[in-house]
Length: 81
Image 1 (cartoon, helix red, strand yellow):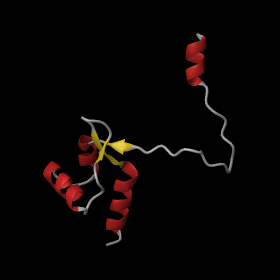
Image 2: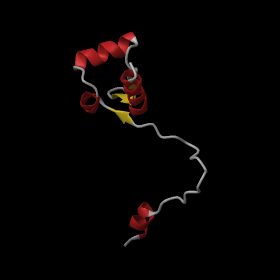
Image 3: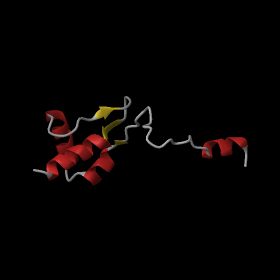
Image 4: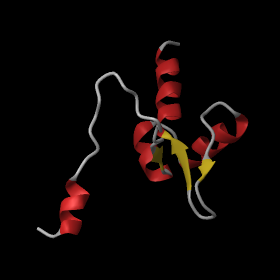
């Protein structure tokens, strides 16, 4: 195994009780979002725009996504209704 391949398999040690210093946000794109929520594409965009659904996030000029955590929190809040 080359040094490069070996390096990619190494992981940083995890210390119990110590939170990571940086939280990584997972984003979902529109196609995946449609498998999570029961809305059509126009409804997702409309609800995002009018504030009744988590807002879309522009990751680049051509990529828009939604925070997976925000969508899950929205779904959990709706389950309690």
